[in-house]
Length: 225
Ligand code: C5P
Image (cartoon, rainbow, N blue to C red):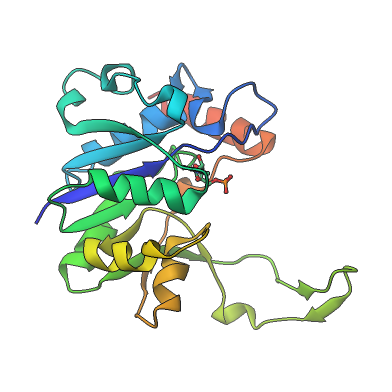
């Protein structure tokens, strides 16, 4: 069945010391949103992409986001007040989907193989799939004063990336009553449903800080794409 990408990019959060919301920040002449949408469509495993934009940008023609060969496979819809509302708006526009991939625009250098791995796991029967990486740093929990309260065993911890893949009905059910969620898989866990993992990719890092932006621009210069 069809696979539809959902890119929640309706947040107003201005980051990276730039003027625009993160998804609209340019990397080497193209916005992170363009790059992410195009990477999904060019992976060969995603049929269509729903971009969830801030309401004032929801009339952006897809032709401003992607090249002519991909325009017919992109729709732009208006997001809501919270991220979960924006994902809900994306789901409403993902008509006919069997699976959906929720993907951060800020992971603009995600390689095609990661989309392929997530979709393969869905087609193999997983209803919820997330890409993960081992954590390099030891992680502590702390209380409100910053005093350490524990040290979880690092071997059992993973850092989570996107695309996060779901059976469309499962994500719709998990998202339905969600007040807010920064992590869609967490909503599925709350239902008591199984979430499986595939190997993530370091290049799928979230471009969030000025340091990330320097790294992303250096990577693009190195591969000259
Ligand atoms: O602000 P934060 O980084 O948690 O947002 C995560 C993602 O969710 C961003 O891509 C942002 O654009 C998106 N978002 C959204 N609708 C909102 C809030 C955030 O699509 N109302």
